[in-house]
Length: 215
Image 1: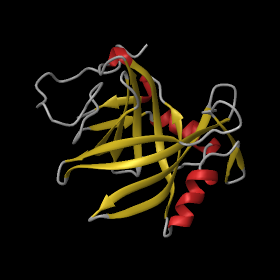
Image 2 (image 1 turned 60 degrees about the vertical axis):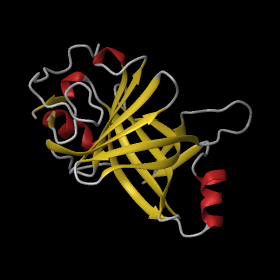
Image 3 (image 1 turned 90 degrees about the vertical axis):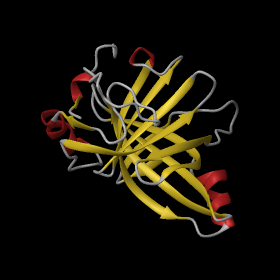
C-alpha cells in the first residue's frame, strides 16, 4: 500500500537523522488542500498549512522490530510514521498527521505522579466536548501509559532525549474518518533537573494521496 508513496531524489545528501519516503530533516512536503478543507470542520485542529517544512526528526524504538519516526514541522504539527521489521517504505504500518493541542508545565512531583498514575490513561478522554475512547488497553483493570524514549534530531542543536508516558485515544467522526488524541507526559533531564510537561495532540490518518514531498 505504501510502497509507491513518493519519488525520492537519489542525489539527496545522506544525513544522520532517520528518514523515510522522502521525509527528512530540512525537507518539506505539501498536504492535500482539498481534503483538509473537507475534513477540518469536523476536527479539533484547524488552519493546517498546505506547505510545511521539517525542522526536527524524532525516533522512538518501540521494541526490537518496531520504530516510530516523527517529522516535526514549522506549523506546530508532526507526521508520525510507524514502521515494523525495517526502516523503508515497505515496512510502513501507519502514517498520521498530528497537531499540538495543548502543552502544560508540570511543577511538582505530586502533579507528575498523578499524571502518570491516573490522568494520562483513562477509559475515555474529552476534548472540546468530543469523547475519545482509549485505544491501548492493558491486561486486567489497569492500562498504564506506554513508556518510550524519543531521540530528537535538529539541524542546530544536535540530538536530545525525552522520556514519554503516552496513551492513544480515538473517536469516529464519520464512516470514513477517525480522529485521534495523543496524551503524553514528557520528561527531559536538563542540568540534572527534570523538566516535565503534559502534551496533548490531535490527529488523523494519512493516505499516500494526502501528502507530496517537495524538498
